[in-house]
Image 1 (cartoon, protein in one colour):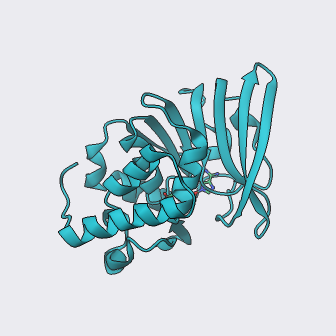
Image 2: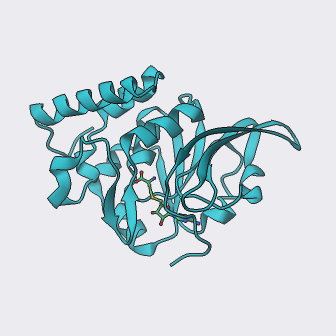
Image 3: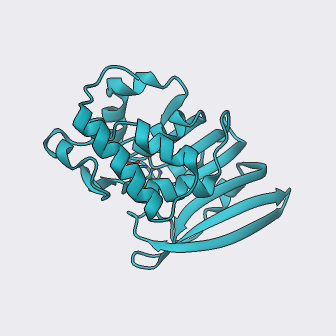
Length: 217
Ligand code: SAH
């Protein structure tokens, strides 16, 4: 990775953040290594860089947030990412989560419905470090049919119900992770496509994400 400033203090704080996420129950060492490696401060609005290694979500403009590192680690662990996996992410936002998947060696296809956020990401030079990141301005409810099927699908905004069109874009044996439910009562769900029409659903902890909305703006 090049094209950014990383002080000794920042890299120490980042390691401490990874350690604190491990204490909160994340055990996948490849996820913890990615959190420890990827500079989160470059994804933060300039006036909030000093908060980058606090385990909290922050506003990034347009009413959206950069997810809490623990939440990023939680979703990434459930996704069981393998190097070379083809992954679709819905909700590019700050692109921090997408970059974590890229650091882990996945081929990442990420979709954002807000033009302003999409344009900001297209002009974000740091991301040229990751030729395995691909961006789309579109409605995640439609998925990315031209690139389907995917080994993994990650939704980082909350739909009220599991979007059926998206599980159709999973490979056999593929996994989808999403926070599902109304504001205030979202649960993390993992769907495994076990065979053609056969899906298994597991339910995990409560979370609070911004809503997944229809259409582009
Ligand atoms: N993954 C992000 C977190 C983003 S917050 C990160 O690491 O920072 C959720 C994002 O989902 C917002 O940017 C929001 O605009 C986007 N979003 C909501 N509904 C969507 C949809 N239908 N398609 C694509 N993006 C969507």
